[in-house]
Length: 287
Length: 327
Image 1 (cartoon, each protein chain N blue to C red):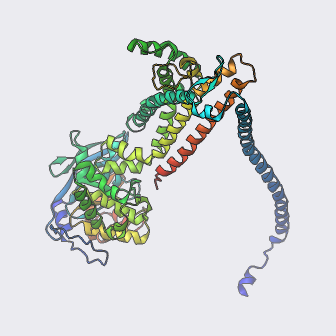
Image 2 (cartoon, rainbow over the protein chains, first blue to last red; image 1 turned 90 degrees about the vertical axis):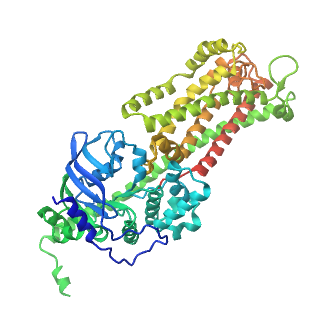
Image 3 (spheres, each protein chain N blue to C red; image 1 turned 60 degrees about the vertical axis):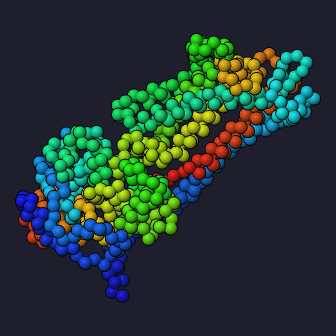
């Protein structure tokens, strides 16, 4: 496997491609597109199990900040398991356990003493199926902020509007914030879920196959959004869709049977893969 | 056309075609049989449905007829029945049929029962569904359901022999028969109903909603109270209403422990008579099966029927209002 620093530089070398998709209307003060990348998440020698079944074998991986990292591989290769260790989502599965180290800055993500609540505020997650709460659109986005901060009504409204604008869904919902979120289309629901995740101010956004339950048009909208969001957030996306990984990620990591086979800049992995298995997978020979 | 030529009958066809078309013809005939059987099944199903409708209709008819003959009596008036709080159908020359005394007794016992069963049942359900490890849940839930299978007469004795003495020890004002003791026993009786149904409703909430909330940094308590319970509210309300209906209709416990003096009081230390309690007293006592006091039983039953009907209807409206579809 290649050296982490070269990786980060490789990832940084990819220029943001011009996209004809939606633009977010909100301009954040901290525009950060072409600065060199720093490290966001550092995984070292991570082994993970479900009961006796070892799902991950000695994974070492660097996730660069403000870039989109795609985790690809066939079903059951461990990519979702890895993602779910990043925010300790696996805590909800009694048989899941892991050894090794995963760090977000100075925070040891696997430590027993880590404040999981704060960790999940810093590392948001978007799931495969849009899962808005059966509440109003406003209450969905306000759910996280209400948990973590004491905000006045107007402050909360600001946060909700900001998050919905960031998630490129504001224009579609601004006139019906009080209506049920479940009345939205699948694509809108997924962008709402992204807004809900953004609203607590995370540093990292994890996305577990965020487009696999969406139609092609909604998929495009969400991909545009992902690409746009990486200016401000570190994004890790698990996907089955190789075109999607190629379209919207900067770094790609290929997993097979619980092992990290190859990781590198997306263009490299897709055009000049070093491993035969990677080439077979990205060229569609299996998977 | 050339493509038609290529479809010319191959040599194997002739015989097989004939035979198969014969089979298919046969299947055409058996289709009629299938239709006939469908009709028979349809009729049986309709009949079963109508049967329960018929039974309900017959019960209402009997209740209504006897209630009418009750009100025909010289000893009772509408004004007395709906306007008085004195229920004294048996003793002395001044009979009085003020239904409010019985309604009051029923409401008092039900209120006491629900103030125990609803909060405790819901909290237990939340514990079982959201907090308890699988092993604890697999033991606790069947145990709770056994509680629902205990004959109510046992609860009645439990109330009279155990709960009442404890209450009397705690506070001197409790009489031997009292509303509190019966209410507590009815509450314990309803607890498994509330708990089991509410737990089913909580379990039916999709895992994705819980994960969504956990992913935002919600604690287990946040997830339970702010996501899972609201999402399951319609099922929880159903559980509550079923429990209330059961408490209103509960007979044996109140007949044993609540007393037999109908009085319009909201003092749980006093003895009260519920509507069901009165009916047991009438049906099992040595009252002749005619006379106003006998027919009063039907009038009480009819009132009880109207009350539970109203409860069910209100329940359906409330449930529709609170309904939160998951997807």
